[in-house]
Image (cartoon, rainbow, N blue to C red; front, side):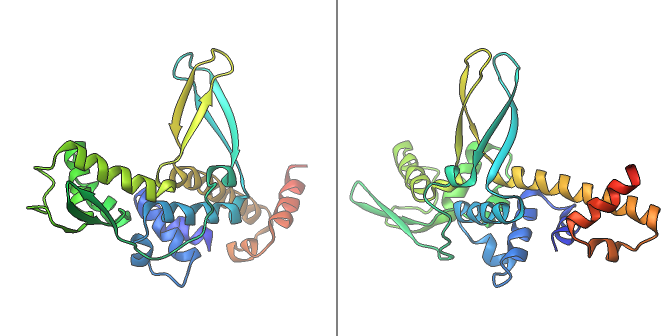
Length: 237
């Protein structure tokens, strides 16, 4: 199944690939239902899938922005997701009171992100995102164009507080020069990088076995990982 998802998603954006993967791994949910998950819940799904496919431990490599030293770091899904990976599959409205006026809104989802990705101006993009999430406001207009900055900041802070998995940051320390910085952890990019490497390695193994033994792709993919490796090791011994 995973190889089929990888194959069918090649021409899609990273976000669309991730939504497709989730809808395949949670077959009771349609693509549109997955797209309506909050960003944090979407990423919770991806963390769950990652644990099932490759385990909890996460290994990565980065470069120190100060001395350009290559740094390897390790963490785990559980340490990044301390609040747990329980899925609600339900949109809950939020609200704040601003100078006696009620502002009701929802947490952004992937459908919103797909829409604002078409906008080039990052400042305008953020305002359009908030406007898409407004549900009911006793303000004069549903447009955020005339909003004061403190109101916009209050809405964004509320969204971030209620969807913490949407923005995971790592504190990184360079062992060589001592430079410290924070970096965002993008589970979509991380997981699809792993899937891409896994799929290309599997396709390569299938090619090697097919050439050397004359077996079909169907038969080779039907073997266990360990069994395929045994045959491949025999070829190179």
